[in-house]
Length: 238
Image (cartoon, rainbow, N blue to C red; front, side, top):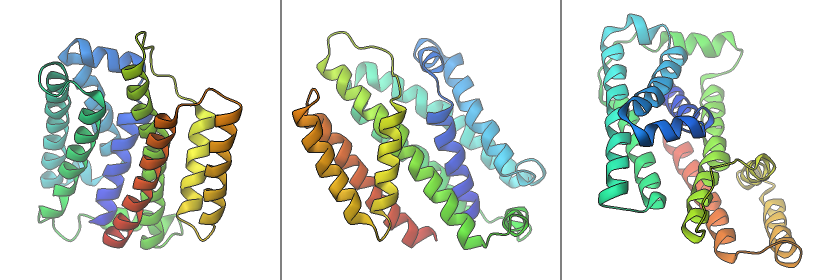
């Protein structure tokens, strides 16, 4: 079942970050149709990654459709709360992600039959990977998307909070690659190299570029937090 959860987590991060463009986000804010389109992208990815169980296993198909509906409701409530209750995109974003992952984890609570995960196991056999290796790859890939895309979104919300003229989110892919490399180094035996790179980045930005200490702290704190999440999740899931 861990394979299924990790496949769904991968579908979630792809749908929420990689395939969520500025246009889709603006549509979400404007009307319910945008939220449905965004959620449908996740749903399509989830169906594709867990096929054929997502189609031919009635119990799982029903559960997955319920998750799709919950995704719509969660995102719509988030938008409403952002306008009326917790008017902090920064906080809403973190709460939103935690709820989505919690909903996906309910897959562990459903008593599927033994044939349910056979395709996932066969998928790892077909690729020449062990089940454990496939789980590690899926988890690392999901975490890399959080490290690259999610931190970019958090920094965008911070920039909006200090700027009177916020612009559309534009991903800095070189910075995203830099964070991804740091993450991979921090979860490896070569973590001292990551620490040296962080210090070098601090010195360089402070002397050469426009420097914002709080922005630097937010980026690095969430990077380290995701490293802890990775090790915690690896111990539980893999």
